[in-house]
Image (cartoon, rainbow, N blue to C red):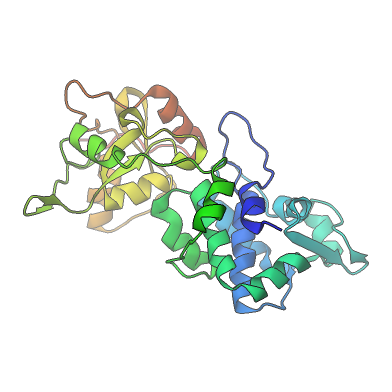
Length: 303
């Protein structure tokens, strides 16, 4: 059985680029727990809070529940659920799962495959990360679910060919094109650090995530410093009308550094791109606002 292919093709609810990472997050969590205890089960009532935190931090802005993936992931053949009454899930409702003492774990065939081939776990996790989350979040997400932050993925020629239908190739030129368009300075704060001629701490951020159909084009990119790239991908920062910076009201920072480097950005105009370069397309900005930015924006900060 091709577990990488099955991992890449998890069935998910989808409409107009809507993010639905519920199953991938549960799957990553289950792989992390398997790595710690290959024989253990995940009692829904015991892991519900962990899964809620993952969905809150890495899921879409709209409210959601971990009961949905706990029940539905079994349909993909990688997960099984049992209750006090025997095999099978009682349903996708929180009360049903709690009342029935529902517990889940990776499917028996998958557990056997992971024990035979330990490196398979890291390759499956990498597929989930690549297909559902931006690179800026991979390390911390691995740590959150109990996986190694640096996972090796060695498909080999045959494996790469099997997954070619679902894994697009990135355009390696995008970083240079975006940084040039924004004249090697952060579009939010203007940071432009270098060591000699080499820029440091500057990254090309996708506005609409590559994992969700975002193209490797200048009009889907921003040059951002490492801090603001991470905050942009976590939904703390966004871009509103007139290409002005949005800062989520959910963000709390009392230190002078937090006020200066984050809160004070509210309402500022983006820096760049230079004349002749394409600004971020409205369709990508709309996707980020709906699918990534959390909550309502703070009012503009007085100059």
